[in-house]
Amino acid sequence: MKTEVTRVVAAVVQRGKRYLCMQRGRSQYSYLSEHWEFPGGKVEEGESDHEALVREIKEEMDWDVFVGRKIGEVTHDYPDFKVSITAYLCKGGDEDYKLLEHIDDKWLPLDQLKSLNWAEADRVLIERFLSEKE
Ligand SMILES: Nc1nc2c([nH]c(=O)n2[C@H]2C[C@H](O)[C@@H](COP(=O)(O)OP(=O)(O)OP(=O)(O)O)O2)c(=O)[nH]1
Image 1 (cartoon, rainbow, N blue to C red):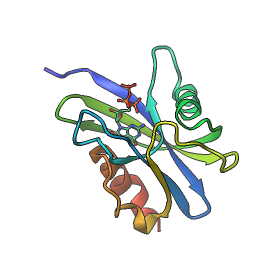
Image 2: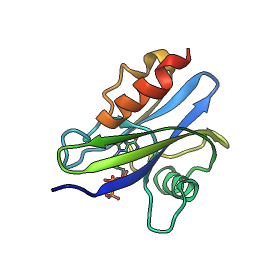
Image 3: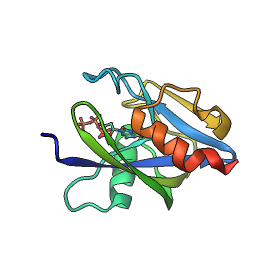
Image 4: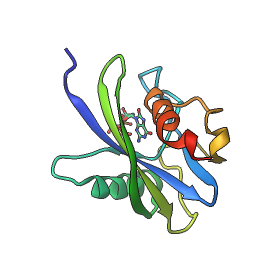
């Protein structure tokens, strides 16, 4: 039984009317492999959401972000594990990030977000918290 929930934080980075979307590389799980997500990752023991977001984005993009308000939280059951993702609205200090783990990035306006092949949990997040804003 997969009862354990992995706590994940995600940064919805806004620049003007566009949002940063990142494409994951290939992975063992077909439902995540090369799918789109918001930058972030797993919260470690003893870490706050804020600390985890700043650390993850530094690690995977060598980038500093300002973490703003909480947008929302979704829990999703993937076939092999369960995640609880808390998303925060963020701003980048500059645009000088690197793709150290991702294979592509796009800055898209809200009405184009759904055109990407998102990880399923993000699809719910976008539907629930981002779509109705415009
Ligand atoms: N960063 C991030 N992860 C997401 C999103 N949506 C989503 O389902 N996830 C999932 C994918 C991963 O299973 C988990 C995030 O952990 P991670 O990025 O640290 O995971 P990983 O599996 O690549 O890394 P790891 O076990 O090697 O540390 O949450 C999202 O928008 N951003």
